[in-house]
Length: 176
Image (cartoon, rainbow, N blue to C red; front, side, top):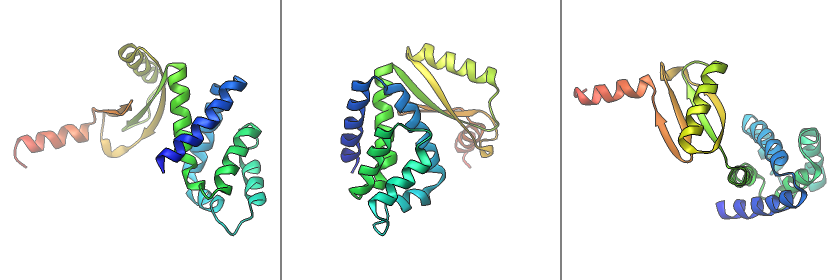
């Protein structure tokens, strides 16, 4: 299934490059993805065979018309029409990866025990950009169970500097 998502994403990416709107579409898809992840039942609704394709397209237009260009709405409607609505988040992720590679940009997912201040975000971005040689954007989340510190995921690598993990390692060393 992941291969099919990649193929759909590659087709959309090709159109975006032809139109010169890759960054704009990547941003729109980022917003769509956030909405879909916050509302998993909506994705199930879009995949429902009981809803006619024209109604699903209208739902997409109502939900994302203010965010996304008509080509993106058509792309999502095509996936729904072909019974692949559940693959929309993967296709969006693949598109965004291609756009990031083209723009020499990477997204770092940061989970911290408390919300990061703007100054902390700037310092973190600067450090990640220096280390990677690429432009970095942050996606931040909060998980109080970390107790302190943060976990940074970028390019498939995870750096876990959380207090929770440090305490777990200490416990393992002392045999508990």
